Picture 1 (cartoon, rainbow, N blue to C red):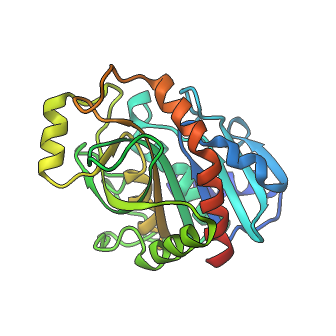
Picture 2 (cartoon, one colour; picture 1 turned 60 degrees about the vertical axis):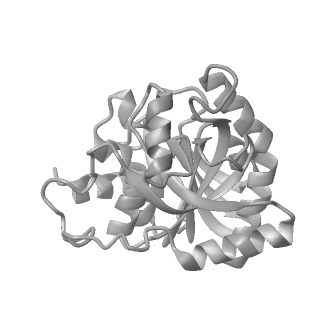
Length: 272
């Protein structure tokens, strides 16, 4: 079955639970799932009940799709994501984003947890992504192209929409949430980077690093969606912190920042 055919089956399963056509899709990263609790009167669809849908295997990723309203907008919230380091094929990693596009979303907000490389990115900082570095050698568009989904060759000169970044900056001012901007580097994981790798990343222009988001952004742009990336810096990267890195720290710092992230996202939704 083609990718388009699998997506059609997934759409039918979701439509059986809700006819809502989302304006905006939101992907919630590690420890950031509490925003899902603010969706009004949501239809909840567990990933396990959507044909062809991958299932998260990592703590901090709930694994359900919510369709409802948030800050006056019709939204599809993907609470939990999958990663290639879990053993998922890259096509499965981006499948939820592709489904969001097929459900009708034209804007997607990708959130994640990251390690801060730049000196001013302390744990808890919110970073609007202006660009990315793909250092994995993986690309979700490799292989035969399905023309109904998007073009063979995709321009990534503005992967993260300048229009959406300006709206997010305005929302930050209006809600009193401090944000910074920067470049995110994608490494596959699941091991954290070495201090030498962090020095390399800093040299080539990375401000933060993590294990997600980039393939989703590429797939979203392939389908013509506008992308906003928001990274919650949950720790200082290897060699920059006083102690060892841990996933528990990622989850805890993500939870501590969730109220500010929720205010920012809701403020953005009111403007977009």
